[in-house]
Image 1 (cartoon, rainbow, N blue to C red):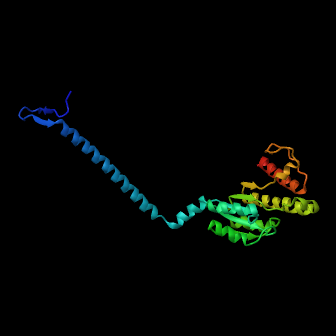
Image 2: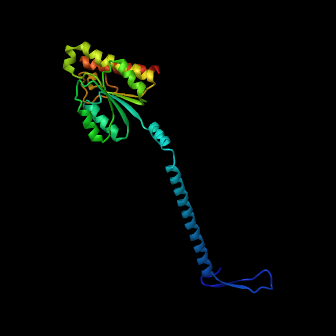
Image 3: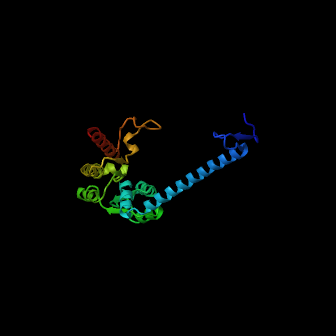
Length: 239
């Protein structure tokens, strides 16, 4: 074995040449230096490649980039989007960089809620003042927008009132929902979140209800919500 600091001699294959005297420490140092230079050059080449890639990326056609971003961004239709729950949902979706289209007939809210949503989220959005009982109104929205998902809040919601005006509630909550579902089907939209109600469980003795708890609504309002739930279940099973 060669010890540290020991000198070694390399004899040439041709006896006409003198032996070469080497210091092992110098050989090791030169080897480490060469390895270090190799690493430095690899890092330099890597950053040069990154710089070239960055320049090429920024030279892309801006319209192409916008088109890619538009295709990646989801657009959500929110019915009843200016109501209490709907407005909070609208803000959160805008903050998460979703595009939203809000529909509301302003029967349970005020128009200035739109400006409050815009102010909180620091983003604007499309709003349509209309009623989901109007199928032609809904059809125009689906034709003019690439809707990916629907969140359905629209509907009448007073339990006591529903007992005095049952037809009004069935027309708004059930017929309105049917119109929405049919226009969704025509547009090929299959993703929906439906805002139901705990009233579908009726006077349950359970402290907490689950998806498997018995559905026994006692109010007209609760019955309209259960009807819509069953429509969605049947749609899911048939598709």
